[in-house]
Length: 312
Image (cartoon, rainbow, N blue to C red; front, side, top):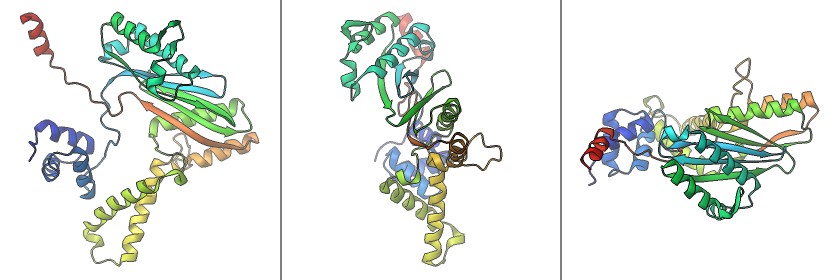
């Protein structure tokens, strides 16, 4: 049996919003497996809010570079401290990395790091990173990048919180004017704010649907109000909750954040913009980077660090 520490209970509680004793019990049931403990809490209806991408903890920034109306790239570069993330030298370096990415043909981060550095072809991107580490005096990491090319329309971008979140939206459109671009910027802001997982319901994988149905069914099975209900009624309740969840994770089904009536969906907003501009307009894809997704920030004990330096 794995030892269940207070730190593990605290982490699970932060991820799910469940009570401390419920978290401890779930960890005991799953022998300390965090992911399985989250599932136990969800099935028991005790998880209030699961952060599926993990706790946002690492420092750094996202930056976006664009090339005309049809190409854009977003990068995430991490640092050890928030102090460095706010450093002008670091930020200028990340901006150059983004410019490199929008010109890149690399298909993964390893290939990208081996490309000639755009500011000095005698070096690779990795060499430039190592040099910047030496200058700044802190470990840095070019963690990821994604390049988007719109083949039948345009791209729109949005950076939030000084680089905490970077979004690229790809649109299929036969009209690219200021009104359409403004609308797409609004959609990019929507993606930043509400963090959808998919563009449309049709894009949701069957395994995601099946997994969520299992969770919802387990929750309903523990609801006293549903005890003894016919199978058809229970199935209807499961599908009702699933459809409600899909509206939250699918961009086009979400309520548009700027809707004056608080009811207009993103799909309805896009249809309105398309009609006003005589355009065929749809969202092809989006990319959303949030700094530190899935990374754990190391716990600093500054008192111990200072003591170690004094005694060293």
